[in-house]
Length: 76
Image 1: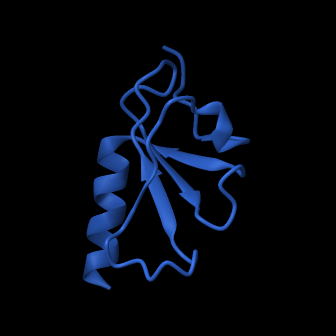
Image 2 (image 1 turned 90 degrees about the vertical axis):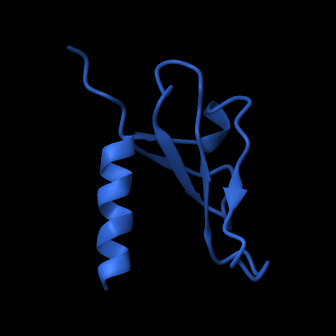
C-alpha cells in the first residue's frame, strides 16, 4: 500500500481547489486556509496553507487526523 502524501511543496500544485478561510478571519491575512482536493493522489485529504503565502507549501491531512487535531484544539 502506498503512503499518503503529507505535504506539497507549493499549493499551486493542487489545481482547481477552492481555498476557504474561517468566517472569523479578520482579513489581515494571519490565518490558515483549507481546501479539499478531489484529484489523485490528494483526493479525500484536507489541504491547509498559510494565507500569507498562497503559493507556498500546503500540509495534507486525512479526515481522521484533522478531526483529532480540531478536537485537541477545542479542548485547549
